[in-house]
Length: 160
Length: 389
Image (tube, rainbow over all chains, first blue to last red; front, side, top):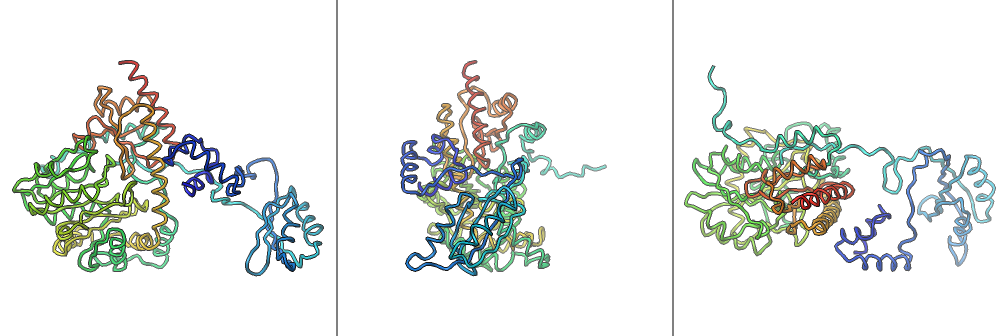
């Protein structure tokens, strides 16, 4: 049940628990227990809302920043990653294979805010060798969801 | 002027629910539970192959029986899923949907006056195709108490000296019924004993929610007397691509290919290239869609249970077939009243044969949100009916 349950709530974390039990074909109490277990085990890390901020009056700027760093003896990339992910404006930090080391996703109110974070805070960290910042111009799809109006059901009623 | 029409064609009964569907399509805010095709789009990688085939200029006819690669993939697929071995260049023909395979299969096998046994409720094409092929259709009414499975006893009763072909439409549209191995074994015994043939329409074979689908062709002695029909519409959500296939004994496939060659030339080339991709890399998509269907199926059965509406648990296709006999209305009356009162369209069971009387076909090729709203309305509707009685 675990994987099917996760697949459902990953798309809709607000689904009614009773209905969740029905469509999984299990008891409601089992769903509740499984959710609690996975929260405790850190498998479920939160129940967030996917927002298309472009449709609100709230201006936001998102940047992807490629960061090359010097790993630290005994700790690898973890400690420098921690220095970076502690900043609240940093949304995500991933260790990446390939031409650079860390992918940092940053959200700010303005272009200047993001730029100054990169130049004042990120670049000045001891073990950061270089950064390369890409601003996101438009989000087409996020978390598997396409950000355009849903299309109508175009299927016709034909003779069954 | 002389009458330009064929008497036989004029005599074919038109589908009785055309008018019902016309009303539904006029109604702007109606919720329809009537559509018999997946609500998913064709998986992108399959569409992409179709586009790629067009870009590459693969816009010619294929060989009459279909692309070699597709026929080979069909054989691989059936071997993988059912354990049956077919020879790709002798025992497979690619058709325009499973429906063409039904038509040309019957025409290839029937002599005037032969009888074709058609279990109902079932898909609406079998009977007219049998008639056009020159057969006498013999309707076998399946029973709710058997969960709409075909029993050996029922089959035995329907067989006469003239019986040539049994149509075996499982997993079933409209009931959602399936036939499991033990059910099929009993049928196969009767088939062999009476030396008749089976046209097994397995278009919903991927959509079963209990055991994996078993084909009657996989039973001992049955491959040589079975035309296995399947297609891409339901499993891969490819209805508009119009692509299906038939596998069977070379002698029958050869004649089917002849009719197909003269009437159709070949199935659409773009669709055939896309279908190769579907068979090669589509298993995960099928599993994902099936998971969704199963969730909706459970949702509907639970909703019926809560409103006290009787319904056997169907384990196939994407239909449920609840019984509405307690309300003292015909299927037609119920469907029309429900549409008028609550603006929800469900197909009366009688659209699929007389034995569908007292039942409704509800399709769950719809999102949970749509089904939830529809069930709220159904519950309200039947509560009122019960109060007024």
